[in-house]
Image (cartoon, rainbow, N blue to C red; front, side, top):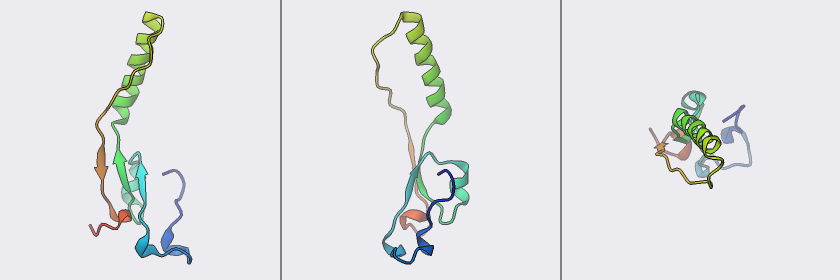
Length: 85
């Protein structure tokens, strides 16, 4: 999350008992946010390395069709999804 997310505990028209928040990236600030957001951890360094490898391959071969590359992710469950951890 970039910046300060809207904290549903301080918005009067939101029923905080029925709100779950999830993010994608697991930035370092996620673990210290309150409530800490549930997120998906990605292999950021590996994604960057794969992007460079793919670019070098395209430049070396004159351009190949795009391909799909699947990398493992990890669900990090924290308080924002209603988990009482």
